[in-house]
Length: 241
Ligand code: GLP
Image (cartoon, rainbow, N blue to C red; front, side, top):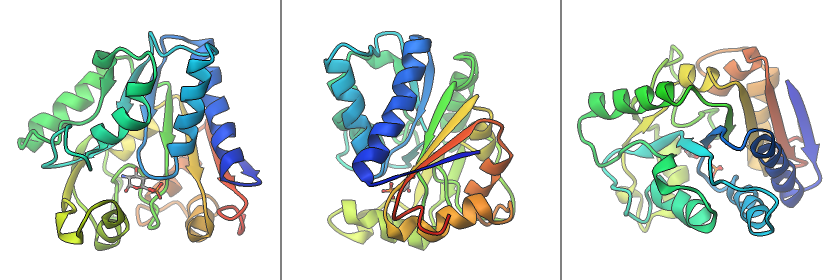
C-alpha cells in the first residue's frame, strides 16, 4: 500500500487526478470506478480542466459509480447520478451511455443489484477504482458489519452516515434510509484502487483503516489486502499516519 500525504486539499486533488489521468493516457478505453462525496469534488475539477486543455479524453472511457440512494431517480438533485453529471459527466467528452450508476429508481433490489454487477462483469471489470472514506470506515455504502458483503447489494444506512449526508439535504428526514452499493468483493476485484481523504475529521479512520486490524467493522481495512492501492490524504487526514 502506497500512502501519500500532501500539504492540503488542492494538492491531494491534483495528485489523485494525476493517477486517474495517467491511467486514461495509458489506456484510453479504461473502465473507471467512481465515487461521490465532498472529497473527490476537487479531483473531478482537475480532470475537467485536463480534459478541456486537451490533455486527456474521456471519449472511450467507461465508468461505474460505487453507489446510489434507493428511491432517488437520477434527476433528483441529491441523487449520486445528478452529482456525477454536475461535477464530471456534463463537463467532459464522455459518452453518456458509458456512464453507469446503480438505478435508485428501480425498487426491485435484486434486479437492480444483479444488473449492475453483471454490467461490471461484462465490461471486463474495473481497472481503477476511486474511493472516499466514510467516518465509520465505509467504502461505497458498505457499512461496518460482521462480514464483508461480496456483490452489489441493498444496504440500510447507519445513523451516522445519514447524519453526515444530511448536510446535502434540506432536512435529515429527506435522506434516504437505503442505498444500492457495490460490494466489498466488487471493489476488491478492481485492478487498482485509489483512496482519497481530507480533513482532521478523517484522521482517526485513516489510521484505523490502514494501520489497524483488518475487520468488517472497518470495511476499508480490507484494502490492506489488495495488491495495488494508493492512498492520497492531505496533512490533516494523515495526521496519525
Ligand atoms: C458517502 C458515499 C461514500 C463516500 C462518503 C464520504 O457516504 N457513499 O462513497 O466516500 O460519503 O464522503 P465525503 O467525501 O463527503 O466525506
